[in-house]
Length: 305
Image 1 (cartoon, helix red, strand yellow):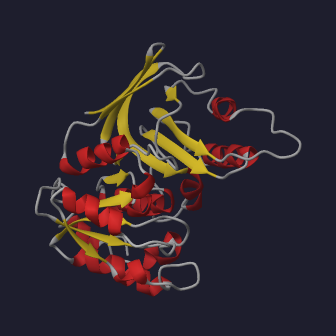
Image 2 (image 1 turned 90 degrees about the vertical axis):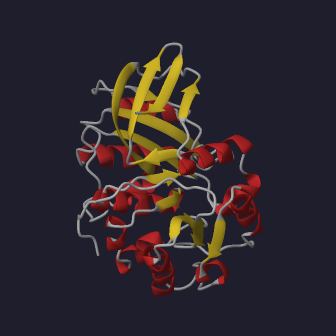
């Protein structure tokens, strides 16, 4: 269970020879992890596969206790330097409270994933102030762009990570800095007022989602707003919102238009089209670390302090 004990040692970047693990905290895998193992091995890493990689329980990679035990194994193993969530889907919220993350306070390690893994990222950042990586997962590696995998390597091995984006006419100009938090919008809403919820004050928020109706995105954002989450942000980065749906009677606003309507009274910078989320070019972001956001008419610059 969470202790709110902050990590007392910095999280080390990976180096060749390090041992990393792949586990499934949510949905079961449809394919072997061959491509992921080959990629990580080519980076000089030793890969350990969790028991959940080959497990099946309805739609999950084993029942809740089984998936929690697999995660616990790698959290407690000091020789494991990073934990890759093999995929998202649904199920992390069912097992997160069965895991004791306290060992991370004295032996922090990277947790990599996105989508449903947003819950684990938020939980670890909120309770232990340990950065996490929002990036490509093993299941997605066969379809991942080479550039997105290069950004994952940079994030893991401590290389310089920065991005330059083309301008969007609905971007809101500004220059700000703050700790980067966020991830999948649906999951951010699912953890409100829980032990995994984060303080958004002074933070730069990143959001993405997939397969949602426009009205549902509007509702989720307004729910965050009513909860006071959007008022005191330092900035907003909007990533991929893919496979969007609309009703027979159209919602009437595009995604950027509805987002800007929600945050209209605030003054922090907002940028669209960051390449992260449920896309092949899912570029890595280190959540829980300070980032600089500069939005200009010529484009957007995002860099880590």
